[in-house]
Amino acid sequence: MTGSTKLWLRVALLAIATAILVGCTTTTATGARTDVSCAAFEPIRWSRRDTDATIRAAKEHNAAWDALCRKPEGAR
Image (cartoon, rainbow, N blue to C red; front, side, top):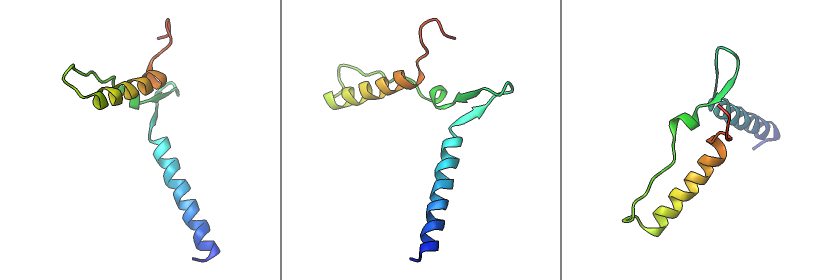
């Protein structure tokens, strides 16, 4: 690969990554940005019949959801 080919490949990868990241947000009529992923996903529940690995994975998912999506007390 030549130097210019590598540069164009990097530019293309950066453009794709940027497009993916921009696609994760929407702009409302007021101009505020909203993370739509929190609306699409919710905490996972498990039962006593689930394996330890499944429960652990659900808890990890829920911790990530809490960190990204849960609003502070008193906030709307």
